[in-house]
Length: 105
Image (cartoon, rainbow, N blue to C red; front, side, top):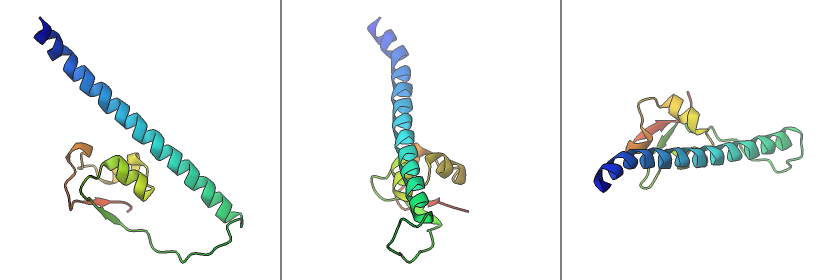
C-alpha cells in the first residue's frame, strides 16, 4: 500500500519542485531585468556620469560546468523565456559543457 502511494506521489512531487524552481528563477530574472531597466533609464536621462566603451554583446554563450539555464539567464541579463525562444532545441535539464546557446539573433 505504501509503495502504491509513493508511486502516485513521486511524479507530483517532481512537478511541484520543477514549478517552484521555475518560479524562483523567473522571479530572479524579472527582478534583474527590472533593475537593468531602471539603470538604463538613469543612463538615458544623463544621471549616469561615467562613460564606458560599449562592447558588442556576445551572440553566443558556451555552457560551463555547473551552469543552469536560469543562472545563464541571470548572468547574461537575458530573460529565461528569451533564451528558451532563441534555443528551442535546448532542454534546461540536459545542458552540456561546451554547448553553445544563442543569446541574440
